[in-house]
Amino acid sequence: MRYVGIQTQIRRNNMLSILLLILFPVILLAMVWAFLAALNYFGNGYYDQYGNVVHQMDVDTVNYYFLQAMPWVVGAVALWFCISYFSNTSMIRKATGAHSITRRENPRVYNIVENLCMTCGMEMPQINVVDDPQLNAFASGIDKKSYTVTVTTGLLNKLDDNELAGVLGHELTHIRNNDTRLLITSIIFVGILATVTSIVVNILRNMFFYGGGGATVTVGGGNSDGERKNNNGVAVIVVLLIALVCCAVGYFFTIITRFAISRKREYMADAGGAELCGDPLALASALRKISNDPGLQDVGREDVAQLFIIHPQAFTSMFSSLFSTHPDTAKRIQLLEQF
Image 1 (cartoon, rainbow, N blue to C red):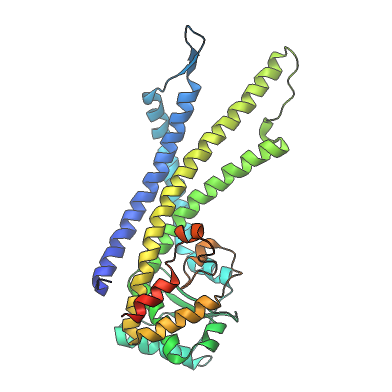
Image 2: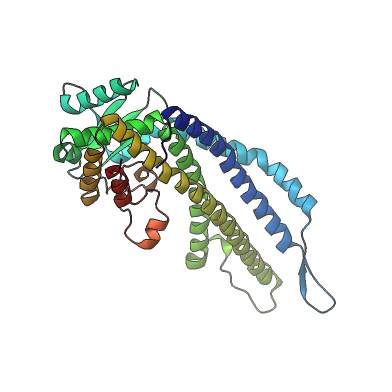
């Protein structure tokens, strides 16, 4: 692996954070325009001389409604982002059940973190512990006040000091590289698109299976009101299907972007952690132990699980490994053993 200096990586991640702040809203706005364009296209249909339905799109009309909707979309996303961004620490702590520790409560882990911070010249982050007999760890936070390293009790009990130093060095490298800020930014935007997609899917499901939203109506023979209601119900379904396709496309692109960021940052953090603790083989040994018994499986939130040093459900199949946010643990261990 080509060596990349810590300052270079920090600059890259800061630039990526800015690009993400631009890219994800652009994808969302593109989804809105595509949705309006599809509505306009399928809504402007007429029969030609042969009785075939011909559709056409009025671009000026689409652009008009898009400009009307854009401030509301941008405002809602900005508000959602700000709330999630500045409350991420409390949400992560609640999801994992973590609690803070002091030097008096656990001098071993506190002293290891302190020594590693002194070695690299960074400020001491908060240290949290999750009561879980299995092994895992992660870093989180967006600034010096919220930076946190979290470990499970199983990790503390089953790793020796050198292995624990390697894992903590890995997590501290995430903080030094601004990985946590970058990943939380991507998680929030992916979460926005996932939530919108989920809402559309639930509405469609309710309409199909429970007759919600007026989609299921009784059409009387020759009853113009019944026919009109039926057409309205079909139109609503078509609108929601168009929205679902737009959401799915946007969600796919955001997921691909996040995968590329997440996988690379793990390799960089492994290299930084090995360099920081001075023992790459200790970190390799720790990763092997964690992969055999990964903890925090009951968190139940995929966005939080992306922060873990090893994803609890990573690589259960070839398909899942292709779309996993974490690289292959065996490959990570192999690179460390060649460090």
